[in-house]
Length: 332
Image 1: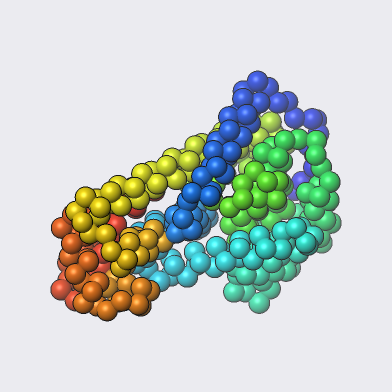
Image 2: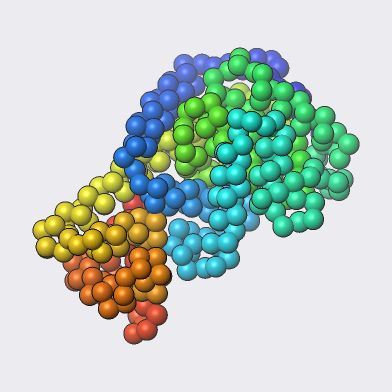
């Protein structure tokens, strides 16, 4: 089945509900952007990791969660690959054609010999043939560059669906397609950091997500697809804002407790700051990251344990693992 070119025909019907969703989502995205200058890179990294884990889980049923990122090397490796691919793509976002951008994401992500190249195997189900993929992707590229007929949020939904129906690569199409949504929002200056929790929301609507794509491919139901995705974007923006708000509150709570208990030192503040990036950590990692002696850090950790800022979760006497629960519970 060959997807029709964008924009959809007949023209989309943007009723009052959709226009309200667009308006309310815009407000939430603006609030997220306002927090950019006040939010640590560590917190943004946590939110990126969470979104990436959920994107993988949508396609591969990994069962991963945020905590598993810090305990499981496979989770960490695969998650970091996608985060890195997004960062590489973001750096070249303004200077290259979309086709190169899309291939760059796939190449950074995949370990296949054909990474970054369109698929060469004919599909076993209803997808465009190998020979049709380059022309379809070129058409999608032209739409990305030139079309301004719809609001960017609507275009994000259109482009994602079109990409998934083309299915240009042998693997990782879903993950790459969801990464493109984040980058599209950055490109259109709706966000400066690609942290919108789209995959987290889609994971809770997984059956409907794939059913909607199937309905679109079979029945050209663009109106139903766009309405579904605009609701997803609204919920994702609301959730992202909630995460940031809770993380800020947790950081303030930790700092306030340090002050009240007279525990403020350069070392303790650096340790608390590191927990924003690594809320699950070992004493060995702390020693390496902070360049303080094990003895110094052990004293601080003992005090933080007493005040319940952190907790020990391994149950071991050696190679203990510590967790900052209020940071982790802020992203659930």
